[in-house]
Image 1 (tube, rainbow over the protein chains, first blue to last red):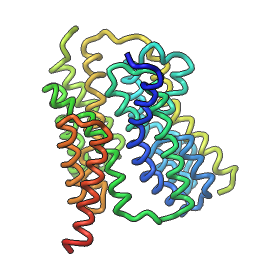
Image 2: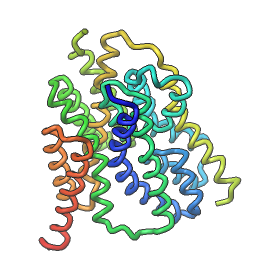
Image 3: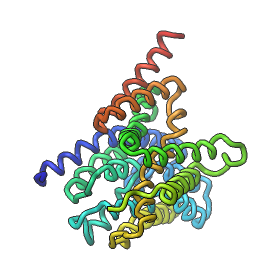
Length: 233
Length: 107
């Protein structure tokens, strides 16, 4: 049994690569927001209250284009619907220490990458999640601040390299799982095939990447659950 | 941007994004028993992560080759079950190395 402090520390350390990746991505968001006519406070506030990449870029475009409120709400719903799936999955992992107010609080931090780490836990504890959520939040908001104030100082090479940290984190979760289970390997292969179809096949590639990911993931997981369900027990 | 224009957009954006995350987390309290649903939930995270990685990772950098270098390094490190941090750093360093080669040495 881990002690409280070491659980918290373990979470904090797991958040370091996420925070670094976020810094690079939100740095770009800061640059784009300011060049679109927002001031740095407005850019930082968007990042601090939304904590999401694709949704923020889309939302920024709607603001600039003076789109309708309905369009804003619908775009956020569609682009961020994957978080609903992740929250359902994490609700099954969260142990009894995450109850009541903690659920309302922690859900705000359900991003792709935090989910990736949390889903890799056998059992999700409050202390671990507390540690995990801190640095990515600061990485995301401070990255936006730096991008908004500093413009394009960071060389492309560094941005490129940091951008891969996000995918590295995903890979660190699903490759070992696929190695350990043929069923998970089938799920992973199916999801990749489906999503590549959405990306490369003319016609299908008109579907937004957010939607494509939802459809591919749900289809792959559902197909595998029907044909290759997990062992009972 | 005028505050009266900015604020409603910001609030709608933040509220929708938050509720999409919070409602399922707060409302799902029971453990799921159904075998299909349990399998689906167990598989879904890996499916989401795999779909988010491919093919997007190939276009995440300025050069396909640096993305491939990062991808290869990450897959190898992950296959040997290195931690998250090591895998992510391997991807970063391999990509950085590839970009240095491409930008300054090969051309």
